Image (tube, rainbow, N blue to C red; front, side):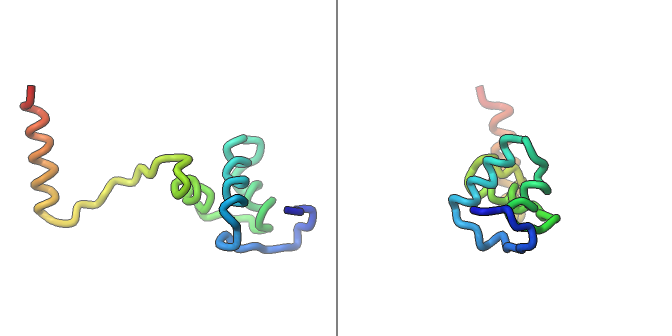
Length: 89
């Protein structure tokens, strides 16, 4: 990819899987800030969390968002497991 021209604007959804991995690897190397990497590839100054989203999607990092409990039965099951784990040998 030729990034010599800076007057282009490219959408995050237009990148291939290989290009996304290249962007992630640039970020992991740590030589440039995330905003600088995003500008290098897209021409945009704001990244809006896309690189981290891709990192979660391709399992470079774990998705650490807690799962939301849907109803009282879910809460009951969680509490039951916690109580049983406290009193099991």
